[in-house]
Length: 233
Image 1 (tube, helix red, strand yellow):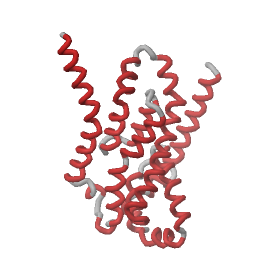
Image 2 (cartoon, rainbow, N blue to C red):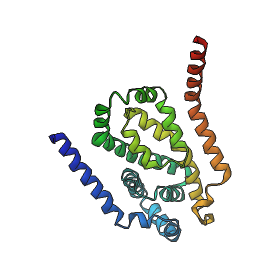
Image 3 (tube, one colour):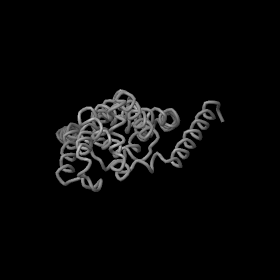
Image 4 (spheres, one colour):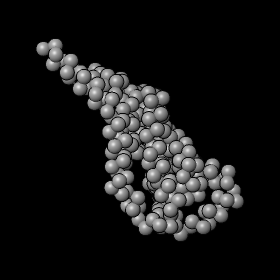
């Protein structure tokens, strides 16, 4: 085995071990709606008394949760809305989520993405050409629709040839609508009895509409290609 492959394997083992270790800590289990509501007053007092420290801690926790694919990002966003109000919470969530997602993306690319692209270059050529043309639309669409797991998009994108710049801006832009909805819901924390209360039919339809607009350019290009091929026959 090559030294570079050994290094990647060691990093993968360390990363996996770290995630497993975090899973056994109380981080994930503590990030629940019930705990957030039970500790709301204490969190508000700490945030009001140590605003800068609370913001830094909030962003760092968000980076850890998203970067290591831990559960609780939604609850963190609700907490952000409760503590900092909607607009500030959206900014802090966006910073933490984008950095965390980017770290996961870069790690996946370093560990396996480059190797896969080299080993299967011929088989992936058509796929890479498609991503080069429509990759931003695809990524943006997946970010806008809440049904796609956030961590899975980070990992899978890292295995492709999507550029880091494209990944960052589509992530940052794509999570904005969800961040706005959840942060605003966090301001009404006392009125939320279940996380499902946030996902109303109107909210889901709005997400689907935004995703439709994001994927529309790619669909139009495909339709033009089909029509041009038909005209040549």
